[in-house]
Image (tube, rainbow, N blue to C red):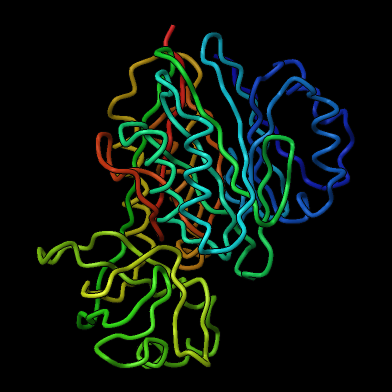
Length: 381
């Protein structure tokens, strides 16, 4: 397996900047960048013209992860050339939040096969139910096939996100790559580092990922009471105070759900993934040290079954909420992951509006919020 990573600093880059990728002759190029790189169709056109034999897959971000840590306004390109791992890319339009599961089923059906080893997927960051998307993919691709990836970002603006794949780009497009065969080395880890506070609240009315009532009271009003002065900055400030879904009464946090939007007329909160009536939610908060420890735990889980020597990719997808909490110390979580993997792994990735991964190898694929998710990709000799 060969890997080449480059970072472009402006959407007006010269085609000569792509020369390192051309020398690698990759079969798959992953692209993570600021929205400006996706708004202009000419950017993807120049990449495709320089690399006509490569499939292009990626999304807009809330920050790009490269060898020097976290940056903004850049495009990170990673070329992967496998020796004996076939890769297939597909895409499907998303016609609205209610289409999320069906879109996942279309992706899963298009990629399904007896030798499908893993799926990497990127979806829009807005107007999507990420948990329904993941459930749709696994329903058709198979529950034993690991699915990782994330939802596109737009800084903390929540206005426009983009995805790119299978010859298309758009604001309402789900894109994915399927990896096939026994030669693929693929592992993953996901961890948060957030802490719960305040009382649990019972979900008394919801529809999918739209939360209407907590303890019989309008969800938005209840949430705003906890946020205090932060409430005026919703939905962006919701990234600092996500919900943890009760895991069944053990008292430890399970899945985390962040707020993507508010409807003041309905008094509701739109979450990145589904919740169910009768479940209990609890607010979460974090500090930098806890989040860095969480990133390290995610890397350790992904690295635990790392069986092959040689170059590999450590793909980092971390939530924009973590970046807002850590501020100028955000590079520390990237450095923590790099220290676990060592110099053999190329680090790249992005800050997202939702992360997709099983909790650990062998567990169900889920949509996460406010986690660091690490996918390790290599090839057996």
